[in-house]
Length: 381
Image 1 (spheres, one colour):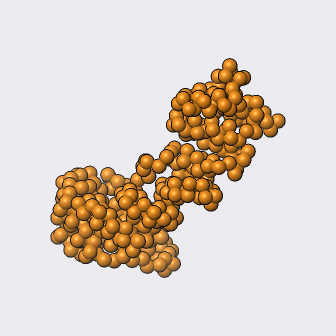
Image 2 (image 1 turned 120 degrees about the vertical axis):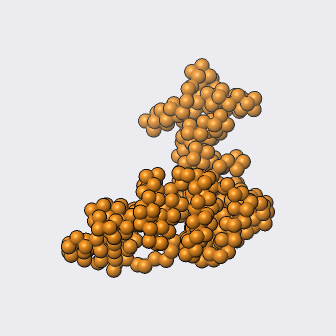
Image 3 (image 1 turned 60 degrees about the vertical axis):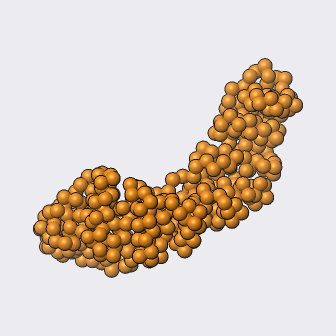
C-alpha cells in the first residue's frame, strides 16, 4: 500500500504522458533534460517512478525539471517525496529550501535550508538564502546572524548589506544598524534611503541630533522622497522644536496630502499649544485616513475630556487602549474620565492597571516608517 500511496502522490504533481510513462528510463529522462525539454523530462521521470516508487533520485530530478519551468509548488512536492525516501540525498534540502523561497514561503524555507547548511551543502548559498528567509519571515534577530556572515563573505554585495542593515534596525540592534548603514553611505553617499535608515538607527540609540543630520542630508538629496520630511519632523517634534516640526510635516503633506502620520503630529502640536479645535480638525482627518494611529486617539480623548464630552472621549480612549493595552497613558486618561463621570470603581480599576505597567521611554522612529519589504530576487539560483 505504501508504494501505491507514493504513486498517488506523484500523480498529483502534473500531467503524465501514458505512452512515455510505460517506456521511459532514467537515461531517456536525462537525455531530454540535456536537450532542454524539461516538460518531457518530467513525464519521463513519472514513468521511472511509476515502476520504482522508491527511487529518491528520480523524484529529485523531477523536482529540478519542474523548478526549471518555475513550477515551484510541484517541485517542492517532488523534493519532499525524495527526502521522505532518502533525506541524505545530496543537495535535496537546498533545492527544497530554494523552491519554497521562490514561492515566498519564507517560514517553510527555513527548516530545509538549515538542514542544508548543517550538511555542508553549498554552504554559502544556503547561508544567504537562510538569512533572507529569516528576513522575509520577519525574524530579524536570526536574519542578522546569517546575513552578517553572508555580507562578510561578499562585502561588495550592497543588496545583502541593505538586508543586513534593515534586519539590525528592525531587531533593534541599533549599533549594528548604524555600522552597516554607514558602510552603505560610504559606497553610495547620494542614497537618500541610506541616509534615512541611518537616521532611524541613530534615533534608536538616542543620538537625535545625528539622526537629524542624516535626515537633512536625505532631504537635500531627494526633497520629494516619501517619509523624509515626516521623519525629520518627528525628530524635531520629539525634541519639542514644534515650529521646525510643523514646517517638515507641512512639506510631507505637500508631497502626500493623505499621509495620516504628519496630520496626527500637527494635531498634537496644536493641542500642546492650546488650540483644541484646530487640533481636532487635524486628528479627525488622520483617523479618517488611517484608523490605527494610537496617538491620534489619545489626543482626541484628551481634548474631548477637557470639553466634558465624556462619552466620545471614552470611545476614543478605548480605541487607543485596544491598539496597545500595555501603554499606561490610555488607562490613566480613562480613569480620569470615569472619575469625572462619578464612576469611582471603574476609575480605580484603570488606575490599578496604570500601576501594573512599566513606564516606557519614547519609542524610536523605526515603527513610524514603512515596514521592510520581503526579499527580492538577488540572483540566487
